[in-house]
Image 1 (tube, rainbow, N blue to C red):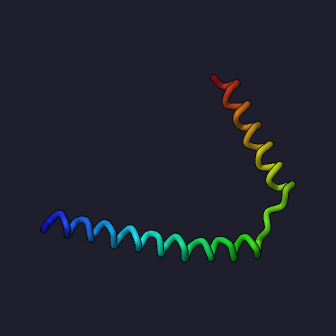
Image 2 (cartoon, rainbow, N blue to C red; image 1 turned 120 degrees about the horizontal axis):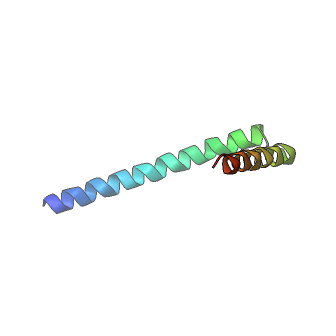
Length: 60
């Protein structure tokens, strides 16, 4: 009996998580459509990350 209760509890929360993710995906898509990521800004971000990695390597 306790095993079945635990199984039901797990299943309910699994479906709850799926529901939250589905709801959130729509909000993420809405935000991305309203604020498109430009290729230049992505390249600048990657360049900055590489600069930071190189600085960290020289500190070692």
